[in-house]
Image (cartoon, rainbow, N blue to C red; front, side, top):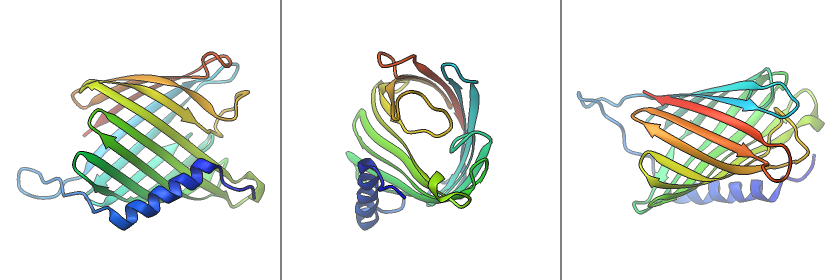
Length: 214
């Protein structure tokens, strides 16, 4: 198996650092003082040059430290995955948040996937990464590393812009790592984001994402 890329090792270092210093986030009580679940539903539509487009839905559920997640068309086309993770956060002005996870992948790709979602936020700037390594149980040479690093600037509560990169197995272009920019808008519990990858390098790939929290 090939050695993990450098930014995979960086993610492992971030995980070790946060596990040493982070604390679980406080509970989110309802009006009766009980801890409540928080849910999100996100659908990302991929418009890929010279390939069929597809939609990748993701559902998450969080309650205090517990993180649950289900995805489809994420690790690969016609492939689903289910995840369980542990939420950590620490800091006030400089906030470090991290969710180490373990997932099971099934469908066109079948395997086990350790992963991590992490972010560092300072005022209106956030650096985040979502990554995983899929150990393919059917073919060892088909195992792969996936990452989505993102740098976000939020000049207003309802607007965010930034830079993004991606290593993805669900679709392929002439570039091994997709890179681009994005703009997103929020309204109440809804979010809408447009990502444009590879503009200036090759024919762009466009991702249209919509999400709701409840």
